[in-house]
Image (cartoon, rainbow, N blue to C red):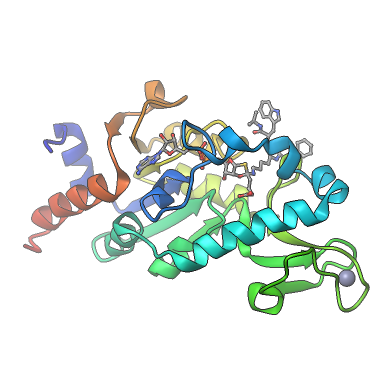
Length: 249
Ligand code: BJW
Ligand code: ZN
């Protein structure tokens, strides 16, 4: 793939790189995205699963859905997209990952600076006393487990609609976006807020914003460069250019 000259020049001088990622980066690991033709929410209604009232109304069903997704995540591995982002750390002063994903695949790939905007499916906590439980404590629980301290319901530590993002994480992510030289927006439809403000903040802060996505999205018209294709293919191509620029090949 031939990259545009202005992008090529920006890569040469960039120091701070931010990756803002969504479900699309994990699609090549076999994890379904939310929206689109094969998306999870084509078959299931988000309002019945991804909000606190739905959980309180039918905790076993919501719990079972998360256990099912955990099994898929447990059995899969990070893909070339995740691993390439880790490799960027060799060539730039600062590389941060701000992700909307809850699958922990950036962590398993080895990225050293990760901000999780929507939580992490591997953790759980009691809705009443807030005690944390990790996935190993609860493996095999088909029905919603109860807290050993207060008998409260245990829920996944993910951010549902109508809930606040983890304290400070969004603010820090916005700062990183503003201070980045290049922000890569990878595999997200950019329709869920406040996360979708990240590319906007990056642009406001003067970053060069590159979108990598199979399709056009809400933000394609306002980024500097929109690359269409699979993240597991495009990111390695960009890394090759960087290696050439830095004399590493
Ligand atoms: C590839 C690829 C490949 C595929 N390579 N690309 C009206 C206006 C504005 C905001 C609101 C509003 N009404 C309500 C709100 C607020 C609401 C919101 O944004 N709603 C909009 C949907 C309208 N937001 C919230 O409620 C947030 N909280 C909040 O605002 O708090 C303040 C508040 C408090 C109290 C009251 C009111 C407000 C919280 C949002 C939480 C989102 N949670 C979820 C579920 C997490 C848990 C779980 O996993 O089950 O997070 S929703 C879901 O969407 C998940 C994702 O992180 C998030 C984003 O999805 P993502 O990653 O973009 O995935 P997709 O599927 O949409 O896109 C995949 C993309 O990849 C596609 O573009 C493909 O083309 C591409 N792709 N394969 C490259 N190989
Ligand atoms: Zn408890």
